[in-house]
Image 1 (cartoon, one colour):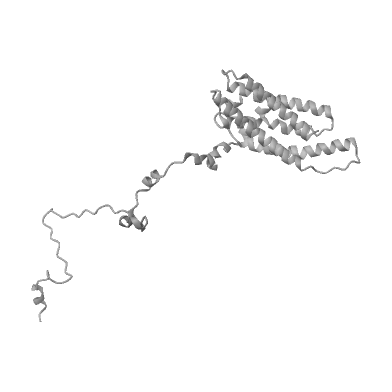
Image 2 (tube, rainbow, N blue to C red):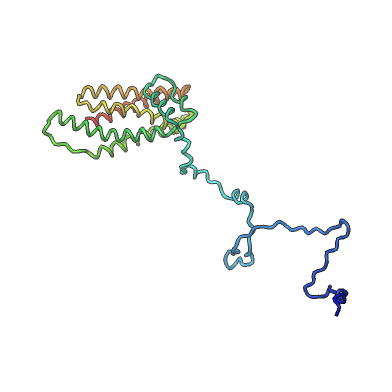
Length: 273
């Protein structure tokens, strides 16, 4: 049989045949494919009563899914990243603020920290003071006992560490918080972070004075204590006055002054008696 004889057979009725595509001029048939949607597998059903609603769910865009989630701003209060900006401070800035805390009348401390208040000083100055008081307090007790009676036995008092921790941390945290809420209640502008920063740096002078308080001379210890307390109290009171200038809150400034004096006396009586 010749090969040419098969070309005339009709092929449109054959199983599996594909009709030829006929292009008539420029009139081409365009098949519009709808946008494909991503689907979630497996299909979700809400129990037996919702079987009719089961099936594949269309997954929306990531932006839509994110916007549908409720915003919980209070979670930022417990997030470490929310406080990272308050530790972004270099050595030069810390040294400048430490020097300012030793010079109460040298300028407005709040103007120096306004652009970048930090909590670095609050934490590390307080922690350093806690260990210094515990160590030097025991050393001062040892020197006083040896000065009075060289034959007296002496042992390290671990309770100094506990007392230093709750007193210093408690003072550095609670007092600024109390002033923050008090000034807010009185209608004055207040910043808790700035208060923590100022009160934290105000404790730095007590670290220096603690080394002087190990001298076993009682009258000299009291002179050092009073000078340290007045210097730290003046730093807090003068800066607090400049911060709330224009408001009749002089009583709160006087209270802040005597709170610092009270802290100095407490350190002397408890750790360097």
